[in-house]
Length: 119
Image (cartoon, rainbow, N blue to C red):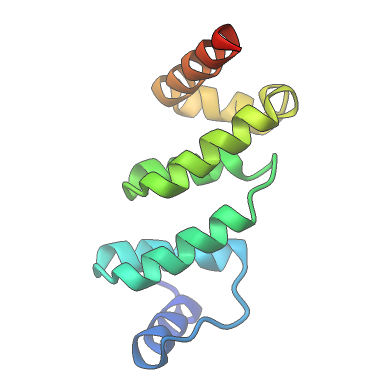
C-alpha cells in the first residue's frame, strides 16, 4: 500500500472522511478496504466507482467487482455496458478485457445477446 492510500485509509478509519477521491485512489482504497474488511469504506469506494463509470474504465471496474465480490458494482457495470454496448464492444479496453478475462467477457456477451433476443 502506498503512502497516500495508507493516509487516506487511516483518515477514513478515524474520521469517516474521504477527501479528493479520484478513480485510481478509489481503486487502491477498495483494495485496502477489502484486505482489512472495512465494509463502510468498500461501500464508499464502490459507490464512487459506480458514479464515475465511463466507456474507458468500465472493464476495469468489472474486474474489481469480480475480484472483491462487489455485486452492486458488478450489476451497475453490466447495465452500463448494455446501455453503451456499441461503443464499449468496439473499444480497445474491451479488446484487452476479452483477452485478459475470456470467461467474464463471454458471460457478459451471452447476457447481452439474451437481453437483445427478449427485446
